[in-house]
Amino acid sequence: MTTQVDGGKKAVRGSLSREQVLRGALDYVDEHGLDQLSMHKLGASLGVKAMSLYKHVTDKDDLLDGIVGLMWAEIPAEPPTDDWREAIRRLAASLRDLVHRHPDAAPLLISRQGLRERPLLICHGLMRLMRDGGVPEKCAAALLRTVFPFGLGYALAELSLPASPDQGPCDEIGFIRRATDLLPAEVSNDLIRTALLVCGDCEMTAQFHFGVDLMIGGLNSYLESLSPGMAEVPEGAS
Image 1: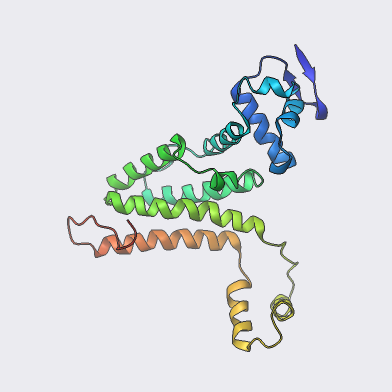
Image 2: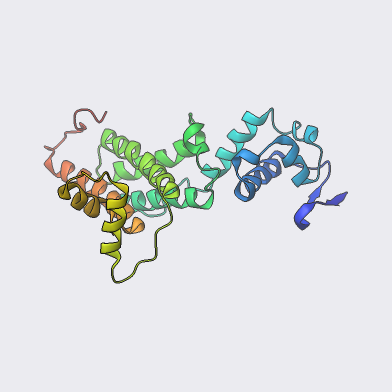
């Protein structure tokens, strides 16, 4: 039997699957925010009583873990290209895009970490590709350990930034005025200049890609420095 629920959504009472419950939970968080999610509210949005959800999820922790699994499933498990450098760039971009698609649910990717099959499959495919491209396994693992937190963390940091003011012909002067208003009156001109260089005029997408290219370029330079047959990683990276 089909029932109509708020917002014109339809759910089939009594025939929900775990996948539908988890998808409904992610959609609910996307629309209302993570702090608004409860079993009662989710049940109402799906057109069922909250108790019916426990046929498909053990508890709210299981529900949240399921949301994380759905988000990871949006990242392709197999590398989309045979070029490992481009595959790393696309992975980083996919991680960033994932956070921006689900800004309210994305913090769960950090707070509910653990050994999960999907990210391991992603790593497995990329490591195979990198090995085929002549990258020592330990170096490939070190790069992946860097790319994952960079892609997710950069995007989460973007979400926390205040809205950018409208730029105009005097934007640099405007930034200096804002910086001097925020900084202590006694701060040196050198620090104001540093604030202008580090915090001003930053296009976040370009800066993101620059950061990924720095990682890839760093690994390329390191590999070029290796003697034939060497497969070590820099001290502190393993």
